[in-house]
Amino acid sequence: RFQFRQRIKPELPVQYSAPALYDWNRDGLLDLFIGLYEGHILYYEGSATPDSFIFVEPEFAGINVGVHAKPAFADLNGDGAMDVIVGESAGGLSIYKGIPGNAVAQSRMTPASFELQAYPNPFHTQVRIALRTPLELTEAPTVTIFNLLGARVAEEVMRRSGSGVWTFTWRPAAAALAPGVYFIKTGMQGFQQIRKILHVK
Image (tube, rainbow, N blue to C red; front, side):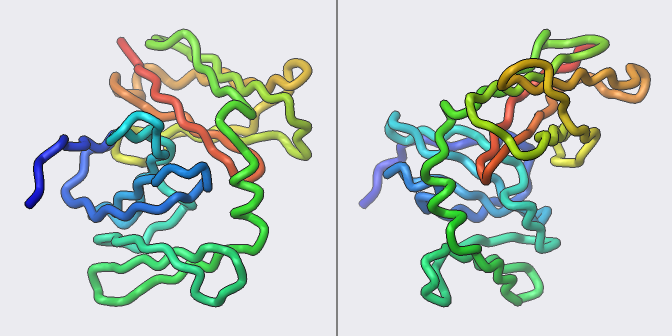
């Protein structure tokens, strides 16, 4: 027998959800992956709080199989790197091979390694996005902005504005940008962070 605990509501509006649990960042906590009707996969990190997950990414690893994604994880070739197997509505399987060394690098990165900020939030005409990190980056990070449907609305390379600080100021055309929730995403060395921002008229 089972007892109902809670219902997890995805950050994006979805018509279909196919969950999978796997400790992707190797922190000892199970992470949640939700395959969507649209073909991509939502990624949530596990939390020390029981039955709680932190939304990280609307399109895990850039994977999109078209329709009805159903993710699974396994080291298919025994090289020590986790591979991702995604079922799809046509009945086939898409296999994404992990690169040896990436999983180890991810496990050494922590959310404390960098901080993603956006202000003001809510915003009207512009929002300043800042990435702060004590790590030495070999290339400028890119910031991507998505709407609630997961569609990319902007993307820009950030500029260094101080020691360990990278920034980008987004000034969308007010007439073309609908009010509502958007997501900003950036990352480095295999780790990504997402923040929610709110555009108001």
